[in-house]
Image 1: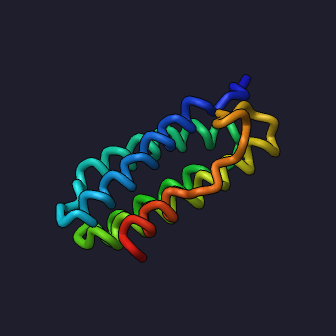
Image 2: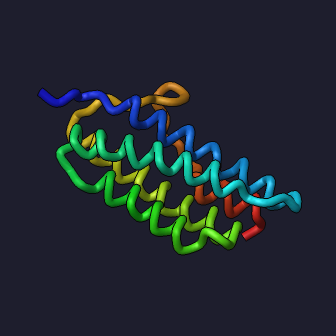
Length: 131
């Protein structure tokens, strides 16, 4: 029987969502994006997405993770575009997984007493970069 709990998978996604603004701050302060940090975090999201896809009975989580990989590959040499495109793909995936999980009655993490997170990783990255 499939587990009705995707909190572990959400944690992998949330950890990765923290990497993106950190890298955006480095870039905004004249530094360089650590492509290795972004790729490593993206790899953990892909792994968690496989598990979430199985638990949710949907290919949607892994499809969104794949969009993140495509965004990374297409912009690997352009720091700001890399961060924005990966953040957009991951934020879209996060919203889709939450919607599927709620519809399927799965357990989710509840931050701040169960309130939904209104600010996406993409919005944070764009704000830091002034876009």
